[in-house]
Image 1 (cartoon, rainbow, N blue to C red):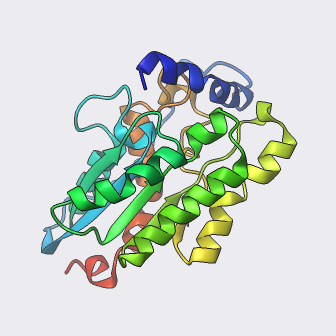
Image 2: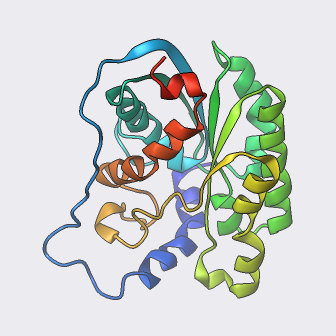
Length: 236
């Protein structure tokens, strides 16, 4: 999908940012308390993590090394967790597209991941695709990963308010319900640290800036560590 086409698909979520910011940001930018850990010795064997999703993982609009998977890997290693994250984010991917390429992605890994971080569904919502379709595809992705004994951390998304209460009532419960049914870890709303802070978002009001990515990493780092196998949490 071209960047122009994808930019058009993300337009409704720009309204979400606008609805959550009643006035323009003050002269002082948002103070991001990243609270990223001070460097600790990296210990133990290397733990493979797969970041599988859409533009929020691919690093849309960011420089090399500024994507969520790249910055998360740095934060994990700074905490002492010897982790290596493969970034399999594709801008514009729907849950259907993700499900279609999942087997190929897994087969392409040099080492089976211990954990898969999943960020999909935002593009389904922006295209007003049926929530039941999103639920079905996400469930299938999680089931496929669990079949290979790969732990899962699901990154949740919320419907933009302009899509209406009925759509939100169907879409918003998808992530917590799958997490509960499939017994996998969940971040309820992946964009929570930046969605009401326009200065942490790019011009499209959807994708985080590099500083915004750091805020998201800080907010989700503990969730990622908790989702890793116990040996990884102990640093090997």
